Image (cartoon, one colour):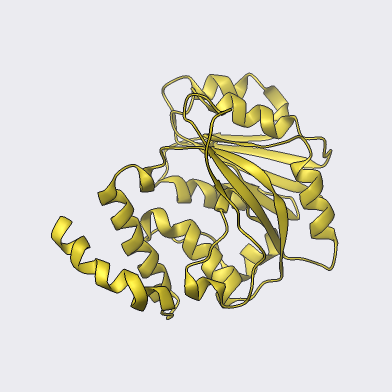
Length: 248
């Protein structure tokens, strides 16, 4: 089973080397590594090129944002399974992809996911928060559940059947994709009860209160795009819309 890993980056020279090393350091031998760069100007391209053919596919050109870049990577991927690891993230241990391959081979799973740790932006040994996903139960998205996207691996044919990332949902595009695949399409997924990925804190959607509220609006839009209404919207998100409007 070949696994394609896609890293998208724009001006990520400060962190991408650790990301790349965590992929190339995996003990699983059947890995295709793809890096999609948004025409960086800070030395990112030079870092990626320094790995030569170990990064099998490297594209550097302007794009329409992170999810457009991810879609480019999916189109280039030749593996049976696809994982996406952002330039600020890195795999937590050497056999992450071996564990993914093992569980994806069992019972014909179409996807899998695990846990994630948020680490300090400058000291990655300092754990700030842990996201324990837990096993998926049908309907869990209705109550606000979701897996951490960097730990989410999906078979390529699932993308072919159900589509890639939507480009009109802002930072909620990964949420909408998982909602569409897991909740709406009902793909068969497995939970790996281990920390698979470590993520540096400070993502765009969480950087300010206003950004977080905007992200919540996009989450709701993701449901509307799929003609669905979550229970958590009526319980707490709907009342918060007045706050969204007040803040602007």
